Image 1 (tube, rainbow, N blue to C red):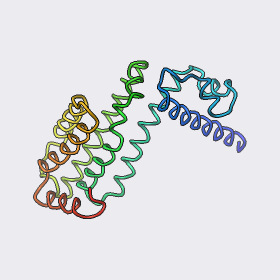
Image 2 (image 1 turned 180 degrees about the horizontal axis):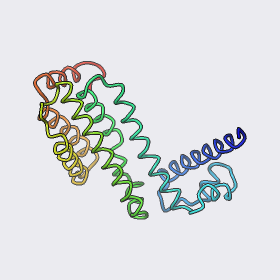
Image 3 (image 1 turned 45 degrees about the horizontal axis):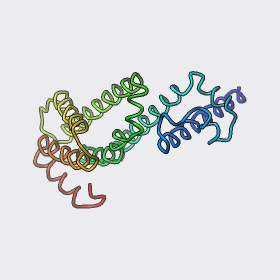
Image 4 (image 1 turned 135 degrees about the vertical axis):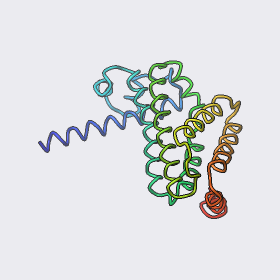
Length: 213
């Protein structure tokens, strides 16, 4: 039994290493320029080892890369929720994290993935929207409980409203700089709209003291 567990652990570790190598290669060369052989060479393993982990071929590797990228963002969001002392701080922390990773959605890698693997891209986009919506709803409920957001706030409606506007910002921005600036102010305006005077006070204090949200 212990041997079986160890073998499973080794297989999972190898799977993770291959995904990381594939991500590094496609970010450097582009999706179309990378194949299974390139991944094997980068890891100095036989091609058969890569094919054993991904019998469905390159499409499975690229899907795994996208899933790993999205899973990392979700994990970081959940982890930071535990560290934030209020819903307002959590909202600002979410803004900072999303600004760090949002440019990835406009990278050549992501654009190529959307073209080459549209079905996988659509599925993961749906999962991202679903997760983000649920995360925002929980933040709004927390803020109402803490007294930082208006009592009686229509949580579901407000979360959907924010998400629609955020998607519009990403879609309409003409450059990474414009996207970052517009997205930054979107959070600011939204927080001020839903916050009580106490919430606005906390918002300003968090922006004036380390870590300077």
